[in-house]
Image (cartoon, rainbow, N blue to C red):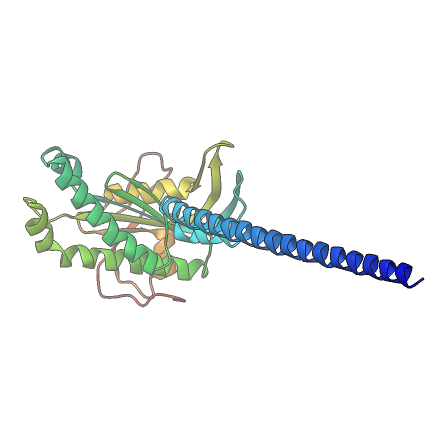
Length: 282
């Protein structure tokens, strides 16, 4: 009986030992698996961070092709990227450089590129300061609008647009000597500006594969025509814009004129005083 009892005890101990060995092996396997999964998670996190950085860099690059207001609105989920538009009261700004075509024909490519980029950067910084939405650059020409995607009010948008134009012209005059010294220009750059306010259609236009966020309508055409009519270093306002800003802006009333593509006579107002204008709502 004693011998049987010892055998039973031995088997019991062997069974427990086997159990302990199995548990120890399972713990080692579990620890190994946990470490493996941890390494996989760390690797995945590293890849995710790298992809996030790549997306951030790509996003910042793409942002340069969009007005900052639109870029921020899209990424905040406030604006859907689809073909859509709406009618809104807007103020439209057009500018170009006097005699730029002849000037560019006589400049080296690198010098022309540097000069144009310098000019556009200076003007764009002022536009963003006043809340303008930069629609597009067409060579030396710039199109900016106020009223979308955010508006401070019809009158405020018009005041800010004119205040922006005044500051731009003041900056152009400040840079008179720099234009000549830095780029070897035979004469200082001169800018013409046309501004009009009215109801426009604004939104995304194009195809499913390529969209352009812009503003269209007769009010846009009039702003463009006024820019072409403006004097060098001048700012020409339509009657609609003048009526919105005349309390803050001194202007000379011009004679009625006929403009191509515009029905009826147009009375334009030339900004007479380039003193700093207090922006509205900024």
